[in-house]
Length: 112
Image (cartoon, rainbow, N blue to C red; front, side, top):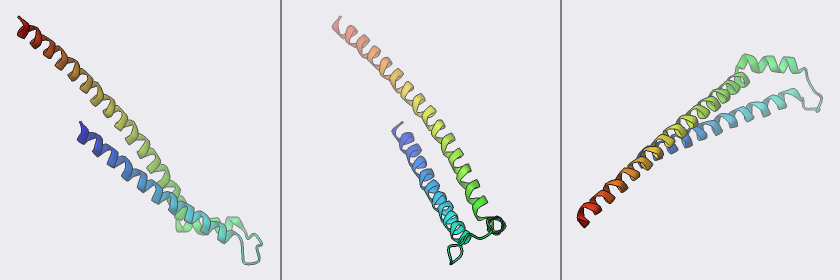
């Protein structure tokens, strides 16, 4: 039980690290886009043209897609983790109830 919990926690942490990595890549692409949108004089250049360059590079679209997919995977894994954790905790509670009942029965038998 404890081992499963640790494994799931490590997996969730790993997914969070991956998520942070993709978010930083997205932010970097966003900064790069913002930098491209403004020329040296501070004048705004054609955003459509700059956006087309980035789409051709596939950076922002790929980063957004990766972030979206990682967020979805993380939500699904968190939900699965919660379900498994609840199941393990329920089994633990049931085992404790059964052990208490067995101990009580053994103590009654010993008292006779």
